[in-house]
Amino acid sequence: MEDRLRRALAARAESIGVRDLQPAAPPGPHLRRGRLSGLRRPWLRRFGLPLAAAAAAAAVAVGYLMTAPGGPPDRPLPARPPSPVGPAPSPTYS
Image (cartoon, rainbow, N blue to C red; front, side):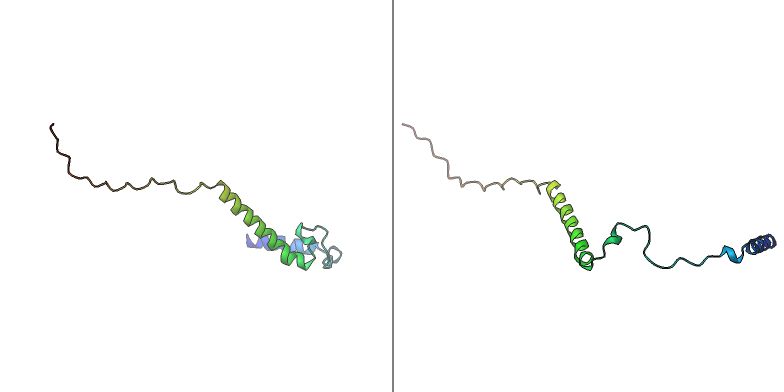
């Protein structure tokens, strides 16, 4: 098996000539640019993107607070202590 692979790779290597080889493309601007690759201004990259992220986080926090329930339910007031009871009035006969 290994011998067959070696022969196949050797045949492939012999089929490539000097004219088939090309130099690498020189470095430079790419033809396909991403959305954020146009941000060449350093102030925009330094302040704009963090401010946009902070605004997005604030919007998420406000949205959560607006849709969250109003808090714990109101608890009833504790019962008042009983009022002092004096002795019962004695019945009077007239």
